Amino acid sequence: MLYLWHMIMTYVFMAVTGLISYYCFNNPQMVGELSHRPSLEKHHGQYYRLLSSGFVHGSKGHLLINMFVLYQFGGFIELYFQMRFGPNSGYIAYFTFYIVAIVFANLGSFARHANNPGFSSIGASGVTSSLVLVYCFFDPWQMFLFPPLPAVLFAVLYIGYSHWASYKGGDNIDHQGHLWGAFFGVAFVLLFDRRLFNHFIDEVTTLPF
Image 1 (cartoon, rainbow, N blue to C red):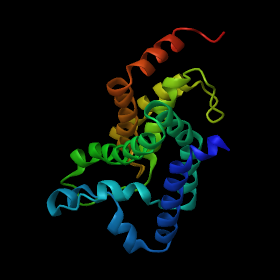
Image 2: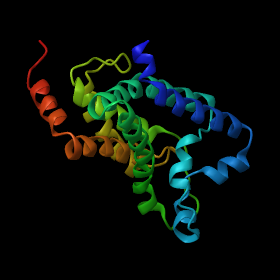
Image 3: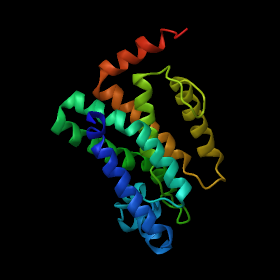
């Protein structure tokens, strides 16, 4: 029960994302209004899209995958913020982390596609990438069920693949958003919690076998 209480902000994000996405499933006009479109952000000042796009998904499968990842890792990271900053400040810190991660994850494609009116993206994959990468600092040898890899190896492969795929293109997925989201998670640890980084070094240099 205590753990569920500490997940309350994660549940709020899941509920808001689910409701907005569900409303948008049959409303392409609203998807267009909320999606990340760098050309409109730069040339028409619609910077709200850098944030609103993180609460919209194109299909039930897209939504379910991101909400599953958010549920699996968001609650753990939310609990970390509670322990790191205290109950009240922890909620604010986690909320701020989540919102900033969405925006930061979109900055890469903003810079790259600011003059490309045909580019748009939606989804919470950027922020969920941040959460997964932060989790890796806690328990780098934890085995993920899917894919069946230790967290630290998954992180390396994920960043490498996102970097490669972002330049390959051709699949209508904003891999650059995934990559920048992952970088935000790493940057947070390096800049704001050196103890967690030191813990990661101790854990990763101690083989679990």
